[in-house]
Image (cartoon, rainbow, N blue to C red):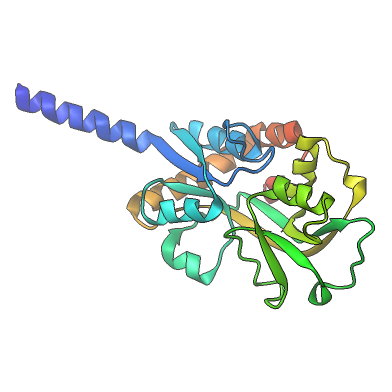
Length: 239
């Protein structure tokens, strides 16, 4: 009887563990807020709930988040694009989470010719790899997040900021900033993914994401979430 109870407890614990998925993300205004609100969290919660699973969330810097997934301290990192190096370290789902229009944000009175000729410090969130479109010779100034970069632009402590244009617009909305005070130049468009541990569990969770995202697109939940956050572009076009 004791052996049976022990095995039952182990099976229940295993089931609970499999049904709880641990996420981390850089805090992004109205996308992945620290309190668990935001477009990404709402989308992910809906996609996994329809698959019978729950998610937990934590807000950590981008580099640390990827490291936590690589070292299997959490299951999933939110919003990373695909590189050859990352494919070796992480499991990617078939479906994208989002797509980003990356570019340069500057004050309206600042001159902009082309990205190769930028003179002055360029803000870049620590851990972001924009080497595919951002020239290596630029004077990069590391920042903690988009809101910090906007404040530094206004104070003229940096001249430009390289980021997802939508992240900038959402950050401005959060702090009550005026988009018309800035110029935003799109340079590159890239897909964003949730990335999982490189193991059997990671593959299973990636498959669940693909299934869940398709189901919430079909039942209209995804469209409601997109409309809630008034996104200018979304993965609705994928379905």
